[in-house]
Amino acid sequence: MERWIYLDNAATTPLDPRVLEEMMPWLTERFGNASSHHHAYGWEAEEAVETARARVAALLGAPARSLVFTSGATESNNLALKGAFGAYRSKGNHLIVSRIEHKAVLDVCAALEDQGAEVTRLPVDRFGRVDPESVREAIRDTTILVSIMHANNEIGTIQDLAAIGRICKERGVVLHTDAAQSVGKIQFDADALGVDLVSISGHKIYGPKGVGALWIRRRAPRVALLPQIDGGGHEHGFRSGTLNVPGIVGFGRAAEICARERETEAERIRALRDRLQAGIESGLEEVDRNGAPDARLPGNLNLSFGYVEGESLLMGLNGIAVSTGSACTSASLEPSHVLQAIGRRAERAQSSIRFSLGRFNTEGEIDETVRRVVSTVRRLRELSPLYEMMQEEAGSGGGDPANR
Ligand SMILES: *Cc1c(COP(=O)(O)O)cnc(C)c1O
Image (cartoon, rainbow, N blue to C red; front, top):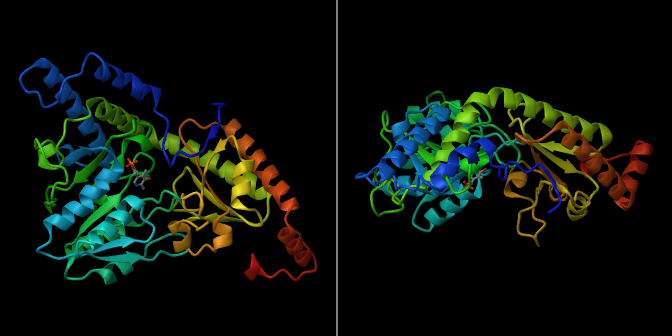
């Protein structure tokens, strides 16, 4: 494969070489089962797991003993929602989520509806923000869980979780957050945010794929969850199965690097993102930004390009790895559920591109991307009769903004 410029860090991040180095012995000579309590192979594996647990929990500002390792944020979300639904059946069956949650929350909700759950899906404003007061209004006596993601994977919007947390606390409702995109990238403190369940993923923070965690508040309140994987009673019975020691060690090292480097890295990535944004916006007209102006992940830039066709745009950007705003099912030009929820009209949504920047991106890559995006969009627009009409109308002073 020729080297593509990688601007899809919200989908997955490359493994940091420092993480790989720390994982290597645990893939080779230190192969013990962390549950083998009768010999040194097991002891050293268990110790490595506990070191990793402390490192990951520290990144959440939370006590380590209530962190459960899973296979990733998808599994963590499943355990949080299905686990709470199973454990709190006697209290109620009502869940509250937002319309812009990751599929790993929305699809779980749909599955739970088949088992008798009632689900409220809260709308968001044009920036993708949930109004905390709408959470308050949606809470019923039968509400057992609120699940609102911390930062959105498509448009990068960061929610006011602290306000939502205060409301949930007042009403005695458990608050889960899918923080796969935010932890390690922006400040996160489980107590300050008032969250009770937190899902995170290793491969979004330069760790390995196939490992993640669910943090479960064990005091004030003590959150109960019905396990979804039984057998062996690992992880305090919350998640059975032999621990993925190399993956967990790598996740721990990745978390430790993020904790130390997060602030300077965020500043660097934000500057690159702003450079990309300014370069594209100064080179092209009719570009809309999706997401919140300020409360947005430092590495996220989601743009809708008017008067170009999404497929042609992607083809023109061959060699630059990005994501689009249309639902991933290749045949459909349906805008993603997130772009729909912020009110993006279909023809603009289908020509939306998500650029997500990360640790290993360089200024040179950003400048090359600006050149490629600007020249591709200009070339496509030269072929577009609609764009020509718009320019003529604008030239005669009669451009109708409603048509843009
Ligand atoms: C990537 C992602 C997930 C899924 O995480 P996996 O570890 O790949 O299962 C869930 N939620 C959000 C917001 C994500 O960005």
